[in-house]
Image 1 (cartoon, helix red, strand yellow):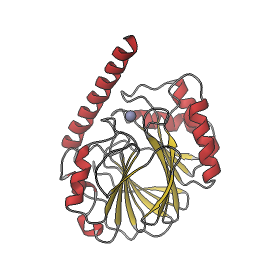
Image 2 (tube, rainbow, N blue to C red; image 1 turned 30 degrees about the horizontal axis):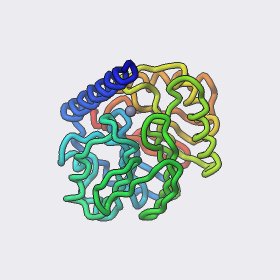
Image 3 (cartoon, protein in one colour; image 1 turned 90 degrees about the horizontal axis):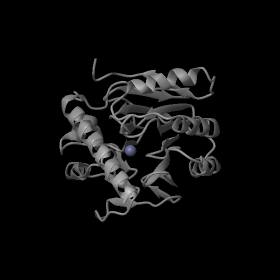
Image 4 (cartoon, rainbow, N blue to C red; image 1 turned 90 degrees about the vertical axis):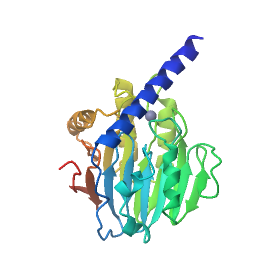
Length: 283
Ligand SMILES: [Zn+2]
């Protein structure tokens, strides 16, 4: 009974975060799409879409992770429709909690021919959907995709695309207690791929609450995976926590550069292990 009540409160908290994210999506001006640029192999344009949402443009692909969209038009605010014809669009959703998933993403297929969805749980949505369980490997549209079992729900995705290796952890974090279920999946990833460019990891619970345990997990993952750059995410709208974490990380002299975005719509450019600031939609 107590556990059920606890779950109910957690679900309500997530719903609240999702509502706030949607509100911020509606009030924040992500008016310009990803800039039209020639993206070469080994290069990516990374755009922060709030909470755990990211759009990553590579040479031949546009990847979107855990986007909580508010309506049908939302994609055209993220992606320049003119480039969609030349690139394959892949929409990744780690799990179906409302702060990671909105069914509005499926409306995008009305205007984009070459779009596919990779989901970390089973959902009957037709041939455009690839549903993956933990520790699966699939190749699709020139991508290699591996999944891990998240310590929360669903999966995390490791993606090899256009000369880059990207890991989006979804809700995989060391939420508390033993680190084993978290570290075991990170160790698995090390065996899958030892040269990782970019990782995205949850820094806080969905309500923006940080904990020593989550931070310990992140440092474990960064030290094991040794990505060139790491982005903290999942702060429930408290983006200042990303900067705070980057400052903590700097003191550790990590080989990995910890980067962060403070505003929904901020854009960064990754190339040869370096990050350059792109445009900010917030000015
Ligand atoms: Zn979450």
